Image 1 (cartoon, rainbow, N blue to C red):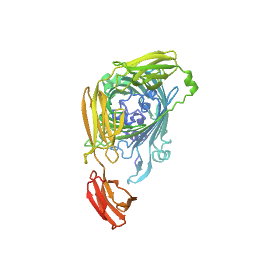
Image 2: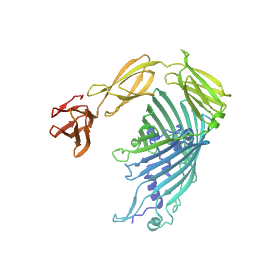
Image 3: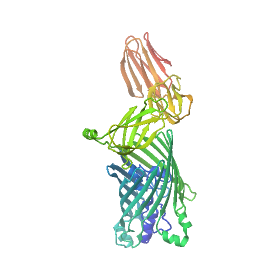
Image 4: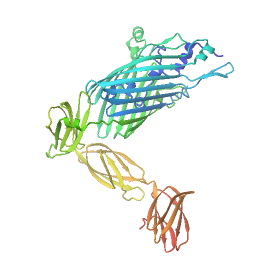
Length: 593
């Protein structure tokens, strides 16, 4: 039997996770230093200053305080470091639930390196087992004011490495080969306009000690500092973030022995950029540097949002290289997120007790009333009250100080702090119009070159038509056009002042039309292979949409012979099937009549 010391067994399994800690291998709990979430890892792990995202539960609990109006559920899966361990898995799940007094978060992490086998001198497997680590966490975050928030978290960590019977039989050690401990996290987040700053302390707790081993493993106590800036231009957003994270194990010894420059080299550096298009598609890139751990390189990610659902994927393969020729193996994280809107109920009696603020909105040049959306945000609690109207907007709220914001897509937004005291109070707002440009969208069939009735979506406009002309404010917009039997069209449009452009959208058909023209009642059967796809009695002309491929059409009618016709359908190429004067004929093209 091949025997090794307990410390080497433990160390080998821990290091197989592929994470290096500070300048000492004494730090335990490698699962704690694996970054979860496809969005954060897509931007190099620079996530300490992000807020309103459920993944803040790992990086900085204070960011959870800005999860508002939705319960958020998220799951992440990763086949972890396939270039090193073929059957390792890393799973992470998190939930954030806003309450009247803050946001409560729950998360769970699971890591396994797969099945471990012990062999004898003849290379025969004598024992096998599956090591794993589990971390469970509960968090609480709250806003101190509209700009500053705090968050705390408590974690339970359980690590299972080797079964008790294998320890006893193979190594002669009494114990169950597992360890458990508790930890706390804490953080602060400050935001001012487009800029936010974050600081967090992670994994603070007593040493990790495995049963059957006298070697304690200090936890990777970590401090993270981060900043984030976000700017939006029309429908395109840019978010730039940077983090520094330092594992504090042996930091005093490192400073004394090697100096500040060495400690700086042993600090993880993160930087990342996220570009969002129309709140639908997100492109991400980042860079991570761990010089002493030999983890240096770029990261990439992609995200999609639709309604209350989000899907994200990231790949940080380029910071790892495990083979002699430095071939990098994909290291994907897949994440699915669901956001459930919270419905706040308010009794009619409570609503009647609150005073009403009247906001009068006009055009700054013409003085005419305009439609707008107005919101009151409580800077202390972060609660938002929203209403819309044409010229006159009524907002019902308790007396106090609020941030009033008035918006119309064609005008520059208005924002100011007001003291709301009595019912009937009036605030007059004159909005300045943005420079505009004109855009005409014409939708055509790319094969038939004829207008197509489609759903045209740009900005907040959605209309079903084949042509539309819009006056739009300056900015960047996502144009999307959809129609039945056609592929979707998507394009980014830049609107400039005084422009007058036409965009011709040519939709690619994914079907053809079979136009059936008859002079008497008939029965028609259409087969695709052996499958009957259409069967009906016709008394008037009719058009059918067919996908690409071969079809058999069987016509039955009085006074004409039953006939079977083979139809080869090509997208965009129409066919005419005529039943006239006891004759059945198939022709290319034709619209029918």
